[in-house]
Amino acid sequence: MRRLMGAAGAVVALVLTACTGTGAGSGAGAGTASGSERGATGSTAPGPAGGPATAPPPRIPSAAQLPGWSHSLGFASDGSGFTLLASCVEDETAPAHGFCRQHVAVLDRGAKEWALRRSPLPETRGGIGVSSSLVVLGPGRALVEEGGDRPETSRTWFTRDGGRSWKEGSRRTVGRAPVIPAGAVLTTECAQPAGSYAEDCPRERLVVISPHDGRRRTLARQPLLGAHPRPAEAAEPDGSWWASGTDPLSGRAAVAVSRDAGRSWSVSRLPSPTTEPGWYTTVVVGPDAVYAAEMGELKGGEPVKNPMRALHRSVDGGRTWERMWTTGPMIEPRTLVGLPVPGQGGRVLIGAEDREYVSVDGGRSFRPSGEAARYVRRTPLGLLRHAAGCSYGISADGVRWAEFRLACEDDS
Image (tube, rainbow, N blue to C red; front, side):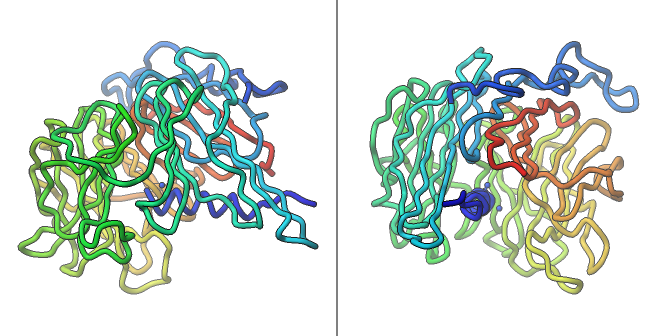
């Protein structure tokens, strides 16, 4: 028998699509900060070009000896975290004998090591791989969801004690939520017909995954963003919640922001380079501007997997927008994986398919940064980035990063 490596790629693809998303091991790297982590922490450093000081990154211990590979990693605002682990083996002579064993690793608040705790997920057999996911819902709270053909029949498990116990539930939506509670996650469900997946759904709506019981509830006040709104999972550091979709009047790309936990929404249309419907828009709030990356098919040039049409910038909190970057048939960056990473003084990074690009003028021009592309997403603790393998980084400001490693058993 040999280890099944292909399933790990399937898990990563599932996470990216949804986002476009141990006992502390012994030995080197387990439960100890790497040199880059130690160097990244400490006193606050001056910002670029003598600008405002940047914030030190959170400190996350490495745990290279966790079993299998890590996916669905997430953190709460207090520094606690969860990740799912999967370890698969296959028998080439008898595929039905293959199986995937799953675990949950938990970082308790203030802990120096990750702890391996019981996973509520059953062992999968027959080479079907892993399709489960996890969302963090605040300190010590998380929801694990198993994949399934129908959302309303897929099982879920909720913990409020750091994975020491789990309560089984389902993905069925129950009731309405007047506000988005602290620690909650925003997602979508099909409104007509109920229970359908997005690709088969004519109209979706925003739902709140509650940090109190892990249940889904329809958000009472919905932003006017057309039939397929796409929310950010977590709030930005200033407390704002963002969602993207289309302007109902013009059909062009639009974003909405709520600054009162979902009680009300303000919609603004983006100066899109085209009137054709796009895919979605990702929004990130930086220290001196808000950036919106408009995703969708490109005309001309080689086809790409994660096409970025344009990058927009707002200096008034999203009330008005300026298109800074328009993607052409050849000029790079043409793609974006995850979120743009904003910094001080007009600095913004774009993680493209092939490499990372940097702008120091708010997105008007880009050059290669010399770094490889990394997938970046927002968590309540900060921006979380992941490259290939088991290496991760976290940052409070998009400038200073602390690196850590998890579950390196399969890392080549």
